[in-house]
Image 1 (cartoon, helix red, strand yellow):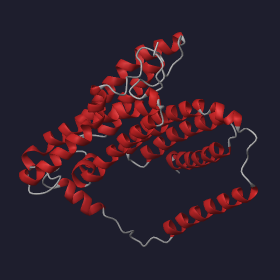
Image 2 (cartoon, rainbow, N blue to C red):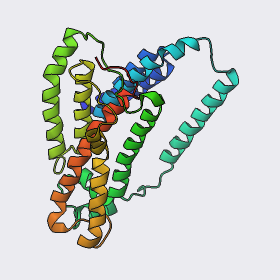
Image 3 (tube, one colour):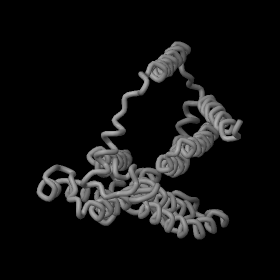
Image 4 (cartoon, rainbow, N blue to C red):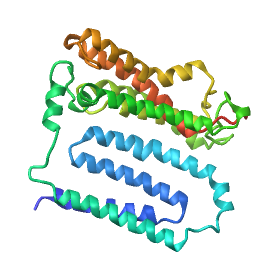
Length: 317
């Protein structure tokens, strides 16, 4: 018997066990650490399923940006948690929540085991559309996201912008337009500063590379943008830079640049290729790379702003 199936079974048990531990953890920080480790293990699972694009996204978002976001949120909710330390859900609520979880898990299991053989799939139609005129890309994942389901991909970035606006709206009216609170301590640890100084430039180069090769190899705008966002957050946590004021014009333009450029080129497709979000075959790849360039910019700006939180009107220094 090959060693790979044994490793796959071990990885499956490890993922399920860590998920259960994360849910059962009583300490907020411990559960967040478990969630980050869970995301990294899922990245390995996607690698074993031969989905490197999804693995890159899971590692960057599930194991990186989301982890930092949850840690920051937990820190800000610390005072509220202390005030409500004695509040626990009622037994009836626990029973209802448990029953609902079992029902959803059972329904999903039933759907999986009762699928017809072969299972219905739109994969051939998606592959045919992505490889046809208007795609021009060697990476089928990027082709599907930008060419086949481009409208959905654009809306996903719009959701990020709406999330940032939602975070900003939590701030006090008197603080509107100011910068969020600094992410790091006034005097960060020397190890954190050194790590940010070394890691951020290298990570930024890797992020740009992942974006650029995404047209023909695993990678793309979201993966590259998430990595650039992580490097910016590392620099902010080391106090090498501070969160920008939310009324900065360059910041707001960067936020909307990706969806705006995507939408403009989508409308241009009506005249250039005869359909909304269609690309002329001769210019498909350059146009898609142009769109993804601005998508990377919007993602790299939106994710750190979600972590930085609402404006608070305090001085950054």
